[in-house]
Amino acid sequence: MRLTIGILVVLAIAATPAEETGAKLVIEVSASPALPVPNLLTNPSFEKGDEMPDHWGVSTAAPHLFRYCRMPEDGRHGAFLKIDAKSTVMSGYCAQVVKVAPDTLYRVGAWTRLRGGYALLWMHSYVKGRRFDQREKLVSWGKNPLSPDFVPLEWTRSPPPDKWIWLGRELRTWKEQTQVNMHLGSYFERGSMDFDDAFLGLARTTLKVTVSGEEITKITVKNLAGDICWESADLPAKMTRVEQAIPDLPTGTRYQISIRTASGREAVKWYPGAE
Ligand SMILES: [Ca+2]
Image (cartoon, rainbow, N blue to C red; front, top):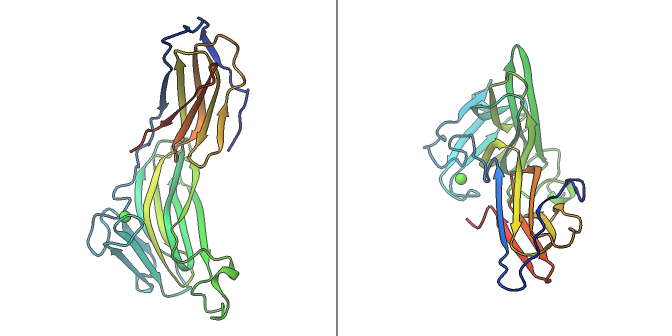
């Protein structure tokens, strides 16, 4: 997380001394785009469907080498997508075409539970005859026949086979690109994997924080992991209203805005608030 202490200019709108009594701290937080940003995928959590999830197609040159199955429960949340790959000679995916805006930064991915093999997030499109191709992978030796049974999985640097792991990245669409085909599946390896809670949406937002009503000495913004995303320098005395825009913050988290007042009071507000 980038630390931008003191780089952004703090706008001092008013320097009226706070009243000795009756002062009331007001913290207003908004964002553009607002959080949480919309998920552009349809049926991203695989809750709708029968044996196959609705709105997701199969993409492979060798369908007989793969088994695709929508499982109704025991996913990260409810139903999930399970893909078994029987061979190393072909890749096989579930895929969905999504409309996107040109030259825009998106966050894409899915929570993945990999028992063995090569799970691939493959974002693909043709833009004016040029091939847009961006990938993110997760690899496990869990079921690899070259890995002897007596080798514990953790020695192979494989992900825990029962743990959901975020397989994702940010990507910027090209100029004139209006769609992308999101693939989740197995890449030329035997294996077995699950996907749930897929996401494709805007990657960054601008947070706007307005604090007023008391003399304010410091503002700190942290993400859900506790990393400091922005911190004001010590504010000048008698500052009773501060407006601050903080651009380029990741959308895939919540933000904790902490205010310290001249009276020593600490106030905290979360954005977005509790769901
Ligand atoms: Ca689900």
